[in-house]
Length: 454
Ligand code: TYD
Ligand code: MG
Image (tube, rainbow, N blue to C red; front, top):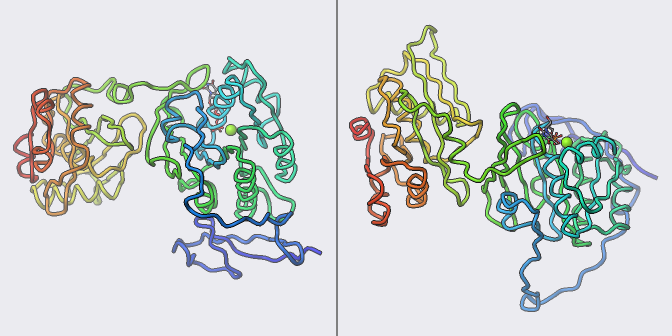
């Protein structure tokens, strides 16, 4: 007989407790505990058949073959995954509703099927007809893609075991549920149970499984962050709903480096790769406007040039207004405070708005100097020379600190036709001559120096 009990889960981190608390002891967030009913079959393990016993092995006997990677047929996506899909891996694709997750995965299914692989697309959100319509729109389907509309994870597991595909897509985890748990689909315990069933399938049958997960307002994969711990790889698909550019970002990757990004454009016929993201991000930039600065951020192993815009104007409020789009709000406040204290700019009487162009969100500290220069430029109403790239980290005493990969950043700037750069002095020495001959390098070590070179 099944016993039902009530437990409380944290929506943020998945912490489990038997009584309600105002603050989650796991992640210290307030008001995140929700009540769920969980039933467990009397006696014994929760999910079905017992796990097969595994034998012990010597470290040296483990075979060392290259992990078997399957190309998605989309080079940008392969890049983010670290070289393709690894067999037996569980990959979570998170993102806002309507951003293009289903479209991206259907394109991957198409490419794999056309390359002769067996794929299974399981949807709990859309009807067969809707999927067919999207496929018509994308075009190019030559070989068979198997579809299944189902929301019961038990039935899905059976279907997967009988079809034995190379890749499975589960769209989305929030619509799937297990009959062994009484709480509604999308609740913390359901999402966890569904994921653990899928993980077992991926590991024992050696197939790659993609799970789609919607993201909540706070920017975590709906409800359980625990999901992120359970899977091998977490990808985020982000971008402004009404902008055409989308960024696929690797947040966690057991089989490759994290923080790699791939840039896509949503077209009439699906998602297309953007070959030169820096070009796109700088397109349409005002060339002689105060407050516009080009900075360089490393996204994984790739440098990306991007425009930062600042608008500083006298405030008409008691409390000056501050906003930051695409960059960390607290970081902007901190930089404004440093400017006020160390450079004598009277910013407490000014509203300040700082934007990253293109709808991206970049959090690298190397953007600090760019943000600061954009603010100074707008404050003084003096444009920065449009052929200048700026990067560097700023400390609380107003010192400019060195950043990693200065040579790669400068190569990108040279490639994009920039002739001048303002960078931390400590980074200047290590630069190869082939770079310094192509771009005028201006090393700075304090805010005062920055003010004078600007
Ligand atoms: P979708 O993949 O359904 O988003 P998600 O699964 O993340 O919720 O994407 C839906 C959006 O993409 C929708 O607004 C229509 C748009 N779209 C295109 O612009 N071109 C296309 O070829 C396709 C298939 C969708
Ligand atoms: Mg979808």
